[in-house]
Image 1 (cartoon, rainbow, N blue to C red):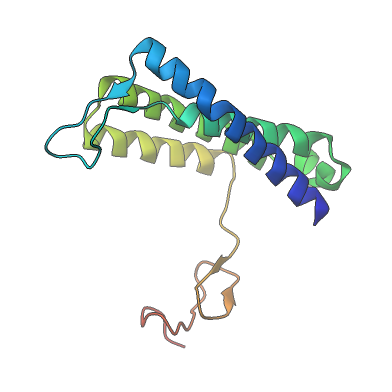
Image 2: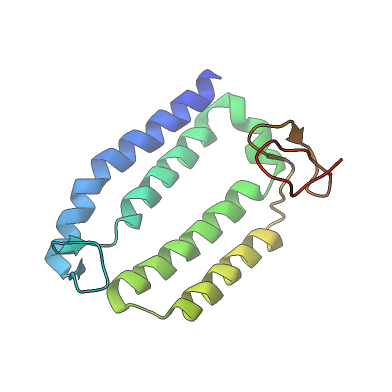
Length: 153
């Protein structure tokens, strides 16, 4: 459990420190979203904040590589590399959108492509949790949820 907290702390601290740096970079290069009639922002807002979050991801992955607790995951699986590649592609898509404002269809196409990168790397959904019910260990299993009537036993 401590190993997870160390990775979380490294990611959170890196993102926290990188955010003002990325903000300054956004102002310097002019990556500022100007408010208009269709937005909720009342003042100009810097974009490219995904860079700070990506720095946090890199820090977390880097720390997990040096902690012995994660050796089996890092040596026996291509999933961390696949996640890194897909996140890098999503970062690129987000940066292009922040600077050039691409269409919704183009963003959706890029996101589907990035999801395909995860699939090609062998990343799989092993389980999911429906709030208010038991955990479902296979995506195809049937679940009962107090919150919805989507799954029935």
